[in-house]
Image (tube, rainbow over all chains, first blue to last red; front, side, top):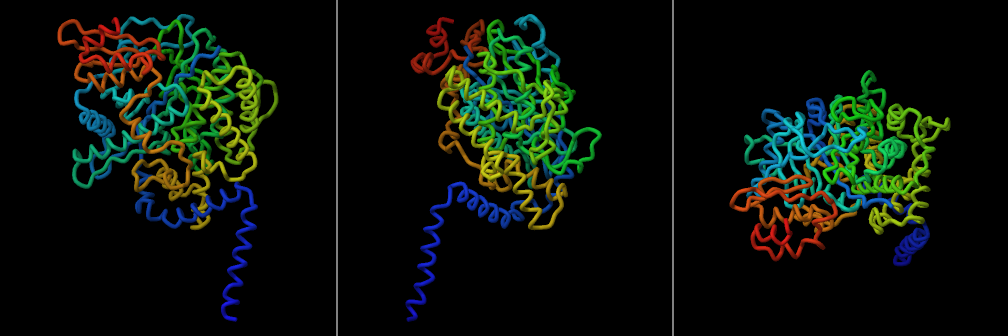
Amino acid sequence: MAERTHREPQRRDDETSEVDEGVPARSEDGTRLKAELDDLLDEIDEVLESNAEEFVKSYVQKGGQ
Amino acid sequence: MALPKVCGIETEYGIFVRGAENDPVAASSLLVNAYADRLGPRPGWDYEHERPSSDARDPEPPALDGGLDPELESRLVNTVLRNGARYYVDHAHPELSTPEVRTARDAVLWDVAGERIVRRSVEMALGHLPTGAEIVIHKNNSDGKGNSYGCHENYLVDRAIPFGRLVNGVLAHFVSRQAICGAGKVGSEFPGQSPDAVPFQLSQRADFFEEQVGLETTIRRPIVNTRDEPHADPLVYRRLHVICGDANMSQVSTLLKVGTTSILLAMIEDGALSDDLLPANPVTAVRQISHDPTLRATILLDDGRRFTALDIQEALLEQARAWADRFGLESVGPEVGREVLDRWTDVLSSLRSGDGRAARWVDWVAKARLLDAYGARHSIAEGAPRMRAIDLQYHDLRPDRCLADRVGLEQILDEAEVARAVDEPPSDTRAYFRGRCLGKFGDRVVAANWDSMVFDLGHDPLRRVQMSEPLRGTADLVANVIDESSTVSELLERLGS
């Protein structure tokens, strides 16, 4: 009995993934992009310089071509 | 019949020294010297035949004799690399010009190789800096405070095409192509406009164009630059010097920028581009389009119609496909030409539908998406200092800081080919001869430039080898001769020069 209740949700997972296969590639792309973006947002505060705003202020270039 | 679209990219990088005196000229020189000194003997740049003040609107092609142009004096450090590129200090920026390449894909390859060279130079220069100091490089085109520096493209064009026809042909594209290859920017730098008036725009460069056509590159910048320095036989060729583009972090954006422009120039040469898309006010139109990331802004055409950037790009693409069917893609490389047409189609369809796929391909879309998501998560307003920091750091070449490396941009190059392109020239242009000679006989090359090399044979006089044909000096034509020559004298003898 306990085994059966344990299996049921797994079957549902399988069914869901079968449905997912029918979704166009473009949505998978979108989902992947969003997941990547979420990951990036999680790490971005570490990648961004701690004094980033100060750096932007001091960032002055000589004009070129 | 369109000429082969030999092309190249020149990138002026932003440079900033932290933890020591911020002298951009000295730092740029340090980078070039640090890199070039590792390579052994270094030939100088040969300024013979450089005429940046020759104007394409003059009826006569530029002559090959005469004195040096005063502008050249501002170029301090200058060298030629084994991959056929030119690496130098221009004004107060390190600049790297790719070797001449035969396709847009190769332009991407040697442009990315250029990034690697600059990144390596930074590592090599580190030992020459005080402890704790660093040189920070950005592949961008503006400091956000009204100072801009360029990323120029060059295309080989038939001298027989009247310059006015070229101008009328390219304007619709130069005004609208920022939608498919703009690098994106937070804020406005248009003189007289508040920086916050434009929270985000498509292009780094759009705010800096004041003229439709002109010779200048550093002031009153024109959309179409008339510098007439073909660096090749002036009776046969022009080099269209394109100064209105952005430096791209996305490889696909660079491919589209160079690929679509190559195709349109070939179409003009084949008489296959209509002139009914001419913008009525190109200078205003560049900004109108850039300042509206919803892509809904319409610009007035000469014939009274109003088109969005996507309307213009779709019309150009349709004509390009018809041209490809009729004339073939030989002039831009058949495989690369096909890829450019397909990717152009995909990007336009994604921008039209808003399905988000373009974020993998187009810098401004990728950057806008990152800014929007970051702003939403942290409740930060558009244009806030933190947003400007993200904008700047998108272009930061430090591997641990570069945001463009982290936003999921599609890579079209593999690492092995990039590593090769750092040290080796393309095989199918005269850059092959330049690069191979430097690799094999570097200690005998006194000077080099785009269309000649000067060799020291160990006795007087020095010998100049002229390379006025961009498609001679290829591996097919000279690889054996270079391989089999053990001295420069032998090489020149076999070449019959």
